[in-house]
Structure formats: C-alpha cells, structure tokens
Image (cartoon, rainbow, N blue to C red; front, side, top):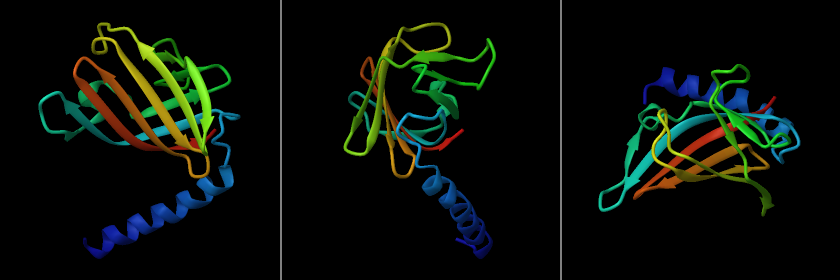
Length: 144
C-alpha cells in the first residue's frame, strides 16, 4: 500500500472513531444511518464471491428508525424503498432487527433478513436469504 493511501485511511479511521464511541446510541433509541461497505453472495452448490451492493439492488445507505420499525433507502420521499422491521431484540450487546420481503419488480423473489448492529461500535452485519442464495453485507452505522 502506498504511503498516501495509508495516510488517508488513518485520517478516516481517526475521524470516525469519536463519532462511533461518542454516539453509543446504537441500542435503537435514536434513528441510525448505516452504510453498506462490503457484500458477499453465496449460491447453493457454488463458492461464495464478493459482489457490489448494486448487483443485488441493496441500497448503499440505509436509514433505520427502530421506534417506527422502518428501514428505508432514502431519508425522505415517496420514491424511497421501505422495509418493515418485524422483530427487534437486544442480544449480548447487539441490536438485532429482522424482517421478510415479498418478491417484486425491483427486488428478487421473497427473502428473509437480519441486521445485527454492535451497540458499542455501530458496526453492522446484514444477512439475507432466499431461494438457494445467501447474502452477507458488512457496514457501519452512525446516529442521526
């Protein structure tokens, strides 16, 4: 890795650290903005591979409001894709959100999903599964 990239990464890490530690509101008491960073897909009978969020029509930004039990692709607006959170649970320092989606024109056939948000750091893992396919997305959340 060249030195310039290392410096930029270090600055990014330093600038995010205070937000993550100071926020500590990752228990669902405040709305969250989560950014999808990395996505892996596994198909039945095949090896898993890294893909882009766009490959599976997953928004890069997710606005999560646990109080309203909603996740949406934009902060506001009628064009925002919305998902209902069916279950909320706090387990061993993680905020666990679960739901399921019907298939449709803009998404694959029906699937179930879980989002685990680490309450101390805001790190996020999203998993979704459907017809012989499983997707795992890693990201980070900040409080709004």
